[in-house]
Image (cartoon, rainbow, N blue to C red; front, side, top):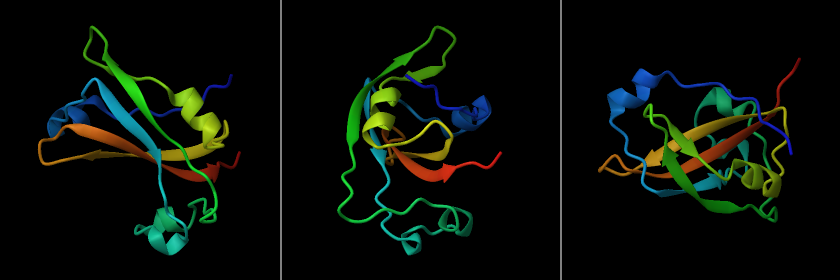
Length: 116
């Protein structure tokens, strides 16, 4: 088993947007087949492309809330293994919610291994 390096989002960013996490959400690898599918330039220049034949996996996973209010999303190890996300890969997690501000999906953009 390996641990992915992580960086934390400032707590006040999530509080200000009033997002709600249900008991289960879907982890999904993005389906950007070519760099043109990625809108932002900084993502487009570094985004890991893959062919349309590449099998990608989504995972419905459990969400739990800690006593101090932090949210824990389980199932990352198996999600990363099935999607061939490696230890030093940089990932951007895009939180997708509806107008009700309930998080339904976290879409993972894989940018590849970081230098250094």
